[in-house]
Length: 318
Image (cartoon, rainbow, N blue to C red; front, side):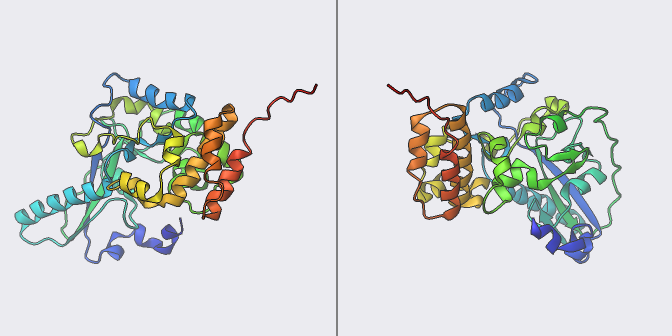
């Protein structure tokens, strides 16, 4: 995550990022699909149950619909224009996970919620299943008050983290986080972490799934975040067979597209290896063998590792 260091203190000093900034307006937007079961705990249990089906690919809930970057930026821009129509002159710039902006911290300081022990923002009425965005403005606005922490003694998010990336309350080692490894990280995934990724091929929701506050998570009012066919409950072997052209076609307008076909295959190869370790399956092995001579060294190395995860079969000697 070199980009964080590259921008230095601009992340903490909005006026250095956008000269003239006096205030920051923060916003959140719910993203749970409209089809999410309303009964508390039901959708979380259904998501965690996917881990018991090692041949099924798990894509983080937020990435199953359209790319949130474009949607939220467009809505923030419209809001900016409405504000400008009222004040007549407004210098502004909108952001959502797209620049050196300390989004969660700004949201916490402006009263959107508090930082949970997993470092994500939590809201008493909406849990954590939402996106954050900001409008930097050159207009002096009265600051809203921050809210108090309501995590108490709960440490469910720390306990469940598959790679123990939450090394202490409010402290995350991104190098161990599955979301970082499957999305931001380029190159080989560390060997010791591959088995812990299980069948998660894009992101990880575990720390949010067990958070008690997410019983209040809200369904999105936008159809944009409804689940796309093919990205929920899909078999690893099916997704691993996608050509680069198919990958680009099926992920058009999705946040997934930005990781590229190589990382997509790398991630699925790891998941296939973990599924293979769970039980010998000729279809898994055949899928991996089909990519054994792939043009990417990274893909080939992960495929070779995955094939090595197959359990040894008993030999009978007569």
